[in-house]
Image (tube, rainbow, N blue to C red; front, side, top):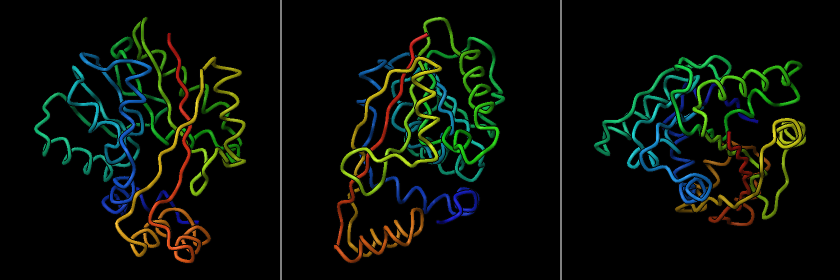
Length: 228
């Protein structure tokens, strides 16, 4: 498996090339909480997958991520779109540099999982800290929306074993509602599909893409949401 820590530090632009091949999830967010006029926090914003599509209607949006190079890509996208209601900041999910009761909505896309993997001996404590911080930052009518992987290369949910306890905790311990969606990749060519899947996912998946000449690669994602 590629080292995602290295990718986020050194290859942010190429990472964005990959996720740009997925559809926007804005309408899924809007079904849970209409975003117009809200103060929004994007936790683990990366290259702006969520920030860039929410900024236009938000009152304000703060993009937080542990990796500054990823935020540079997000900032350039926001500037290019003419948005002025945003800021970025390097931050740890467990200690948010934000005032209490300062946001209406927190979104987090494919990010908390890096602290919630049961490969980490302290994953449960990590999750308690993240939840505590999000609830501290949100106003009384706030909403949390979390996206995580349910399997790349699969047409129905097939979540990684090391994330199953985290996903169960969201529902059983923290009271989140849940559903799953498709976030399929639509690549320009088989060559691009193979290169980008090998770059971020695995040789096994990339070999399958090349063998089956896949330009359209299925992926499932989970959405968890909580109203305060």
